[in-house]
Image (cartoon, rainbow, N blue to C red; front, top):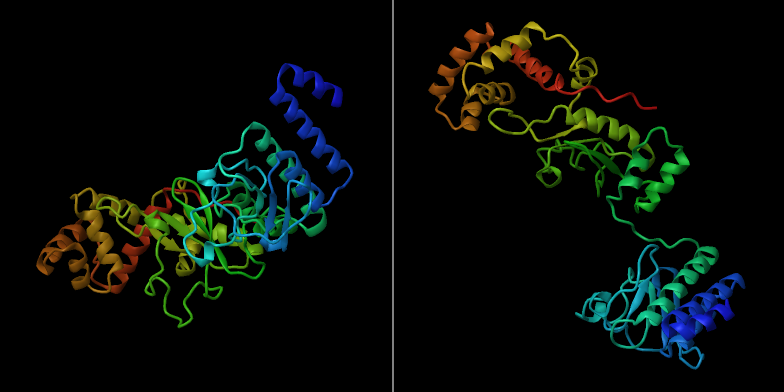
Length: 379
């Protein structure tokens, strides 16, 4: 390697220097060098003080270009080039390295700003960038070996990790590991979210018990549980991370009861599985292949009567009274009565009675469920 670096340096000085940097840190890694030796290598090779900071693991090492360790120093400078300790990251430019100091909290490194810095202003040139990247790669190996993997916080929507924690076929240990990588505590309450059109999320349930309801026992929807950014979604019950596959199966069932929330497809855009009750039994029994029952055909016949029919039927089925339904539809009570007369003729049953409203509710639920197949059983 030394001979190759010398020959390469004769042709391209920067390439030769980069090769020597690689060989230097590879040798330190093979010799199982410690953190101070690695930071010293970065300082000596770069000609600038080098500083390694990982507050979560209690690491602070600073070495001068002459090789002497001097940890005492001022705050990190946003203009210094650095590389985070997070795997897969590269040299940050000066402008993106750190936000400008904005108060006492930013006088020192943020807990998430674990990395290796070279204490000189401006972006790193090619050789300095190579020093930072090779030194940090070696530092990661040492930290993982001596202090455990960094408690890094990957993106909460990391698709591969989310898929793993929701996979009932994955071993329990694998799901727990993925949950930890997502930053989820073993006893933390979380719930799965099934998004319309595909996609899954895991949502922490801060301060709420496992049944997903507020501490005062009020129904969660009334207490202000909100849809995830207004998106159409089914939300599973709150569980411990190891039980997320159960929450995921329930979330997919809840998603089948959602609607676009439009005049032609009225209904809630977000449905919580823990509010479905016995309707989950209906969801298990109804799918796209189920032949249409007479009440469903009657609803389809009524919906075809007028553009307002679907919204009117939904309002009547879901409101506590006809007056409330009229208010939801923003029509006069007499107008609603006229509409119902027309719709009841198409349905061939009375929706004013409790029994008639129940038939309507079930028929509308079946209408939604026939659009999608039940999720497969989970183990």
